[in-house]
Image 1: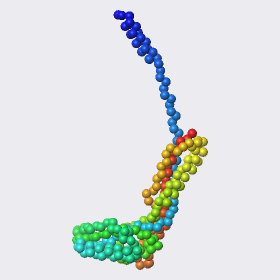
Image 2 (image 1 turned 60 degrees about the horizontal axis):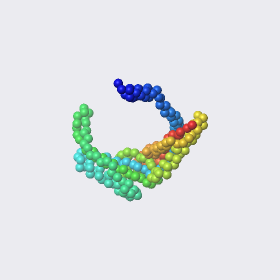
Image 3 (image 1 turned 90 degrees about the vertical axis):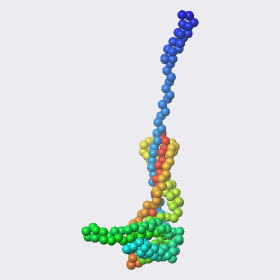
Image 4 (image 1 turned 60 degrees about the vertical axis):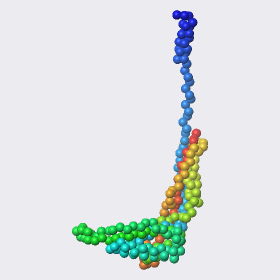
Length: 237
């Protein structure tokens, strides 16, 4: 074996041994981020200025044509009355129309006949709440025999929703400062802010007492509360 070859082989062995002895220093571990997460709530109370009502007409007859004719007559009377009362045409909308047979049964469960039912539901937007009770009383007198529900709202909710969000963030910040002081830490900076508004105002009332004969239906609009929630994450030290 030639000497240069032996020297080269020894050099490679030495390099390998040295490489095994060299230790690469580990990267310094990063200290975990310390955070504080808080939630806040904001509520704004408003007086409703608009109402949504579902008014229904249900008729029955031995044949479809008679049930339909009677229903159309009563429904048209309601629409005409609403327009006379100042409800805009855009605020009167048919939301459902159903026609179906309904069997009649005898004392032993046998079918003794069939009637046909027609249901027509009208969705009404009432913008003058001072006349709401008398309006409902009038539509019942005109032929409505179902009132499916009354919900109250405010026509322009943007300002109230913005105020609810502001109060929610303000509440979250105050809680963060209180918790930081109690825990003996310092708030550094905001990492994340999330604000959520409720989908619809929460009614603070109970509307009851739709009736005919004793004057206007006693309807109380009460108040609505618009709610927002905020979530804030701070880094702390």
